[in-house]
Length: 79
Image (cartoon, rainbow, N blue to C red; front, side, top):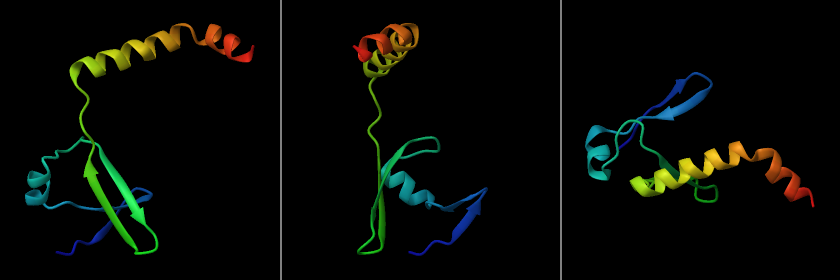
């Protein structure tokens, strides 16, 4: 299968055929990991596992904690 490289803003993109997306169980908005092998001149990608609800909650709580105590954390890091 061959796909055309297209321009989107200042970036280049390659579309994923609907059948391929269905096989990989990816949808618009999902994240993928991209790997480049410069020697072989290949690019591959795979879906990134979605975080569980509890992992998402922990990540949100951690971000809130870091925002709230940013100055204190920076002060501690300097000691």
